[in-house]
Amino acid sequence: MLRGAITTILLCTAFAAWSAAATLKPRMVELDQLVLAEDFNQPAPLDNKKWQPRQHTRWSIEDGVLRGIPSTQEYQASRKDHQGFEPRLSIPSCPQEFAIEFSIRFVKGEQTPLCPFIEFGHHVGRIYWNEDGAALLADHESVQLDSNSAFKLESGKWYHGLAEIKGDEMLITFEHGPFFYGKHPGLAVKKDGFGVAGFSMGTVELDNIQVWSVKSGTNPDWKNFRTTFATKPPKVLKPEIADKS
Image (cartoon, rainbow, N blue to C red; front, side, top):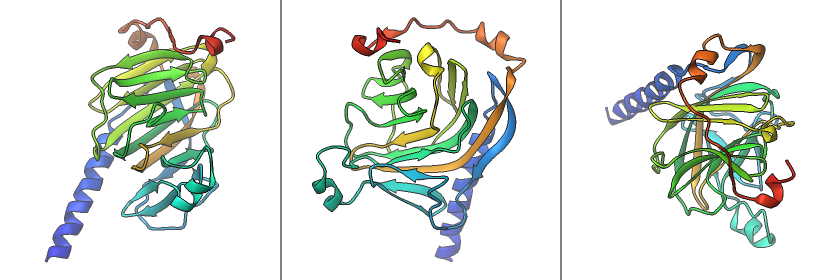
C-alpha cells in the first residue's frame, strides 16, 4: 500500500512538472527539427555524447531525473582549480541557433561569486543567481543585459524554462516567472551548447529536456511581442573585456 502511494506521488509530481513545462511557447524563434528529447524515465548509463559532466563532477540518471553531485574529495584535493565543487554539465548537441526547453532544480550548498548558473554557449550567455536575484550576463560575464531582483532561487524547487537563441539575441522564459532578453555582439559567436553549474557542494537535477533547431526567420509574433518591453542598456561589469567587444 505504501509503495503504491509513493509511486502515485512520484508519477503525479512528474506529470505536473511535464505539464508546466509544456505550456511554454516560443516567442522569438520558429522551431524546426527536434534534435534531442529526454525525460529520464528509465534508468540508464550516462551517454557522454549527449551529457558531458565537467570538472569530474558525477552525474547519473536515477529517480526519473538527471542528477549531478560534486566531484570526489580525492579529486578536489588533487587540483588547485576547476576542482568540481559545483555539479557541472553541458549538452553539446545544441545547434548554433536553437531552442531548449528544460526543467531544473538546485539543492543548495554554498553560493559562490560564479555559481549557480545556466548558460547558452560556454561564457556566451548566462543566467546567474545570487542573493540579489537573477541576471542575464554575456561576453564572458563582462556585461549584464537584463536582471530581475525578485527571481531568487528556492532550494529544491523545480523551475521550467524555455531558452531561444538566435543571432545576437537571447530570450529565456520561466514558467510562472520572468523572462530575460538580451541583444549583444557577444552573443553572436560560436556556441557549444547548454550548460549548468550548481551551488558549491550542492545538487542539480534536470528533466524534460527538449532541444530544437530553429528556422531562418523569426516567429510571426516576435515583432509585436518585442514592442511590449524596453531593452535595458547593458551594464558593464568587466571593462577590460567589454571594451574589446
